Image (cartoon, rainbow, N blue to C red; front, side, top):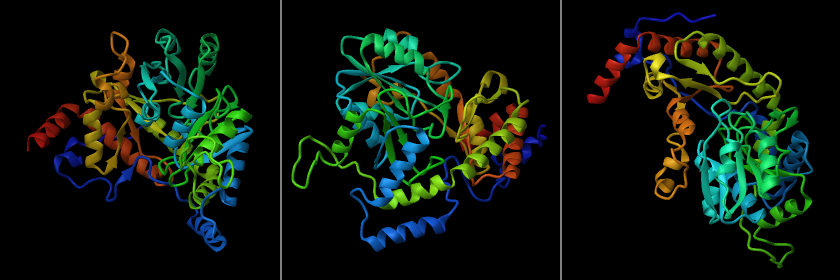
Length: 405
């Protein structure tokens, strides 16, 4: 099934009215049951218990642990704090290998704890860390590997686990994209020493702002709980240098309600993904990142790779055409962590530089999905993409004129 292309002059980049009167965002918060959120918050207010391990946080931790299938869930203020606590809890130092094709928080969490991120390239097919190159990057200063599951698709967990065991390195995972997903039939969240989830507002299940660490390691779990609460073991007894990483009861109220509606959100995401897949299937130079039908996925991201050599438009040119229509498509993760100003001068990269990371950072484009998007909207979005690609020379000319104006 395909959408019909319109004449290029119908596009908003040509001065016409945008296809959508209100912006369609990537990662707009899913809020399917506002009344239930308000009732939980009201309960917290009535109890006068808003943080410091209240009943909503305890329930949230139990439910996350049960969903993932682990012994321990440590709920925290956000995903970045979760990563920092994991780094500190695992006692990492020196260097840790991390993919460059990830959100900058994966690298910052290491650097903030005075651990040098050593940037690794990714696999061309999965977009996740290349285990073979990771082995080449190991030095006497390497203490760990941080794998990042991307788009809900898992890293090569087995190869990384084998490498970490052979080299006696810590292995943990940034699973910010992968809550509710599986790898070889096992829930993501069970692998490595621990895994870190983000429950930021942009995630399909969210707390507004929140994060969590999951683990089956009793000793590590105890240490992480200590570190998230200033190192307190009693009312006036501090035994470690910790921080304030606690989740609030108000955030847990949002998170619990989001969990209640998880099946509804995933079903909407899957229907949206399937619709995009049908509508975009035959457009030249456009490839939708696939999901493994054998695995459970949250279908949280709808991601394109735009091959400008075939499409006639670059990823950024197609994004500009969509943004003009109020479709706020987003590029991920540009320009790669190793190219960010904070790391560019000191980044330890192999020679030549990270070619797959740099290719993907120029091609990847995420489209809106979630409860805000219906299939009628997807038909219009796909029609815009088709019209822009099939009229690439005219669209490039119009975009050039707009930039020059």
